[in-house]
Image (cartoon, rainbow, N blue to C red):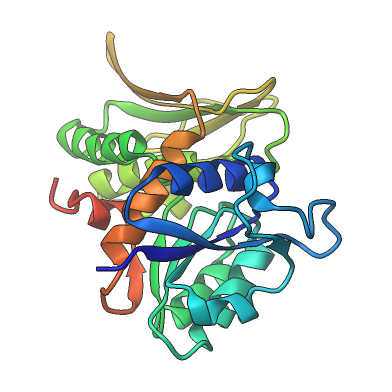
Amino acid sequence: MSDMRLIVAGAGGRMGRTLIQAIAASQGVTLAGAVEAAGAAVIGRDSGELAGLGRNGVAVVTELKPLLAAADGLIDFTIPRATVAFAGLLADANKALVHIIGTTGLSEADETAIAAAAERVTVVKSGNMSLGVNLMAALVKRVAKSLDAEFDIEVLEMHHNRKIDAPSGTALMLGRAAAEGRGVNLALHSVMSRDGVTGARHAGAIGFASLRGGTVVGDHSVIFAGPSERIELTHRAEDRMIFAHGALKAARWARGRAPGVYSMADVLDLKDF
């Protein structure tokens, strides 16, 4: 099979440059395009030079649509508004395409729009593409299912000082895993912040706490606090390359699959873990 031709959205950002580096270093994939928002300072620049690789002949452009004819898929770690627009363009391209979505902060309306596009596009969407985090989510679900309600569940996350959404997409993913393990609806049981005199903790609540500072790539812990003992599951990301490698694994897995919305649990065969 020929190399999978991938476009990187947000090519001028830290994650975009990491993805370009990962594609250059990986077999079976090749860079088919690099896209940035209109007005970005990097428009017209060589994407290889931006990624510290030297010239690769792929310039950063603003328009995705002209690139789709010669591409097999898009890797998209951008912002919700852009992700929804990209999903629509891929759906309208009238060819088999893969959309790998690592964007966080998606609203219910955004999710609905992506699901509509996935009637014609193969979408792999995850709040975190790391292989380790997705294994952790499976463990969280299993632990939450095994422990009784005497164990309170808290999700703690910390990211760099430029992250714009909270809780992180990964924290929400871990919270959903805990809720699924407990057999409850996260929206009805989550506590996103605490301030002032809050009273005693509500039984069955799944709490979230978000920290921001420095250059932290991403730390996540899920704490199961029971009578006289605690179980803590923790993942610490030390390099954005782990997300890039996960995204490339997802892209290869998704190639040739039927349209629909998939998760990294599908990619890693963790659905029945």
